[in-house]
Image (cartoon, rainbow, N blue to C red):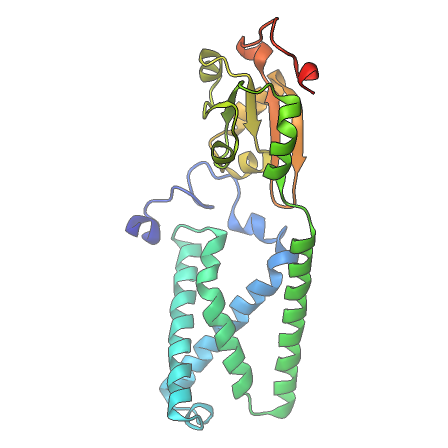
Amino acid sequence: GLFRLLGTRQTTGFKAEGSHGSFWDRLVPNIAELGATYAILAIGGGCAVLLLWGVLRHRPAITALSPDAAAAAKIIALWAVCACGYVGYAVAFGSLEEQMFYIAAAPCAAALTIGVFLIRRRGLRRTAAAGVIVVMAVQATAWVLVHTSTDDVYAQMLERMPTVAVEGSTMSVTEETGQFVITGYDLGQWVTVPELQENEVDYVLLSDRLVENGYGIADPEFAAEVRDNGSLVLSVEGRESDLQLYDVREWTGAADPDSPTTEDAS
């Protein structure tokens, strides 16, 4: 855990070996959903620095506060600056994953709130308050979009799988979740052609997005071979994820003339 924290061991995330996408590649496609959050992180981080500077320099805006309020402001400023410092380190050197930014989300939001509260000039305070309202409106819009769009690919897959894949068949699952939710099939994580043929695998479960981004256990070369040699029998698309199930029985030699075909199962 310490090595992952320092970034000397990067087994997952944008900088992990085999990862095909960077944080910046993900930033633009997700900007509509996460843009307001990144704005809070950036502006709140700046407010935290100014707030800490004001505390250390005993600026009038801070000294006018009660002792308890000044102490709370100092704690939040230190919290936010330290959190932003680590996130900055993760972006530059450490193990970077999108969820790393949650470390700084709460303190930056608190620092931004205090920063707006401490503004003395009425016109500037109104401008800052209007900016906060805009950010919150964008956040609310993103929340509505997330909670009204379908992203239940595993639920859809489990509902439809019995109609396209013979129960009891051997299946290679190449992402991390399928092994925990799929029942009624002989599961394994075989991701080479010899392994598929040795285990007489009937079906291979892929996720194109995971393969593209370097997650899961299937590399692009293996995925391409499965697509070229298997038959796509099920494809499910969601807002953030996707799944494809391929029939590879003819390719792996698992096909049995007496066993039900995909058409029979459906």
